[in-house]
Length: 179
Image 1 (cartoon, rainbow, N blue to C red):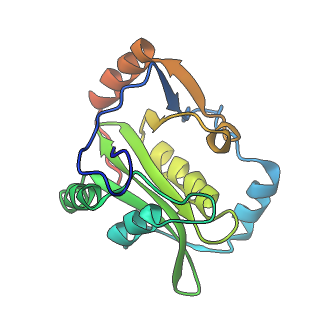
Image 2: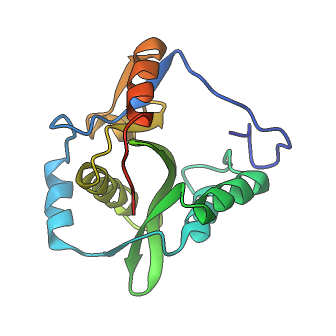
């Protein structure tokens, strides 16, 4: 991560408590959101507009004036995408990208990096589809780095660094493919 979009230096974060979303039955979709997902108000795509998703995550919004995503981050994650290691979940409405998220896959671990929303619930719907894809493809770890109120409503939890590293080692040792 970078401290902010203007930073030249990239930093490595290894927090004492790590945010994860369990991919088992503890993942919870709030009832109102579940109804919306079932109505299918959006078109969901994977890996068709990766750089646009990253740049949208980096853009300022009413909820956040600045971001940690600088040009070097955009370049590095785009290179990972081109090598098949980074992926995007995209939410489209009327031909326009209105929400999404991106992250990196390694073995059976997926590291969610950032999400954005231009319309109500678009990023949440992207997350629901991400979890469906990860379950379908037999991933075992969804790393969110930090626990936020936004993620907690889906059942995200914090686990100690040592426990996280055990889950990570197991997940990396397994074979899963996002595509």
